[in-house]
Amino acid sequence: EHSSDLFERLQCRYLTRREFQRYMSDPSMNAWFVSKHMNEVYQDMNQPLCHYYIASSHNTYLSGSQVSSESKTEMYRNVLNRGCRCVELDCWDGDNNEPVIWHGGTLTTKILFRDVIHTINKCAFEHNPYPVVLSLEVHTSGDQQVVMAEHIREIFGSRLAEPFNDETSDDLDFTPETLREKFLIKWKPPRLGRTESQLAL
Image 1 (cartoon, helix red, strand yellow):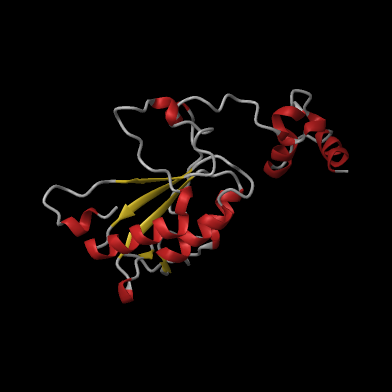
Image 2: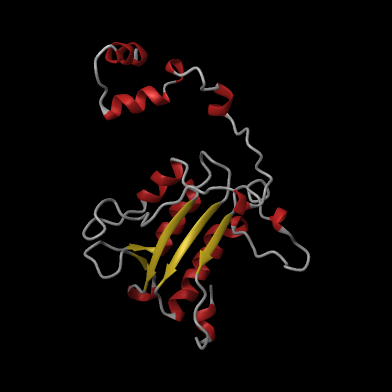
């Protein structure tokens, strides 16, 4: 039905942007689409992780404007279900020693770091088994970094990828295949001179 509608539209002098997108992604209108390539992974997934482009999300938690929109845990579910494999968490000190996620210095709302980790853990591999990178932008105190580390270890459990031994491992230990259903944590280490509690992550 959609294909016939598109065919009729092609008789006109123009297509809308949405119609063009439908045309370009419709297998029945494009013979070069191979069903195998659409329904299963056919690429080599045993190369080092750095050999791949990784679909990433910026300010993942925001539902709209970067200045005044709501922060929602559901946004993580949305992007992960659409194939994103790297999500961003901007981490700040929250009340009651519970870190929060929000776009610091703006009117955006705050959500608990713990709730975000729970959501990611629940839906990260529903449709895609390949590893998920959590890109942490950490603005928290050392004490709340400890809380973040505790939440990550407790909630992710065995799904958390542990650092490999540099002396016995190589790049092929870090491939999409060997890291199936694993979480990787990416963050910028603190500057020298921080207290031990600030090295929790």
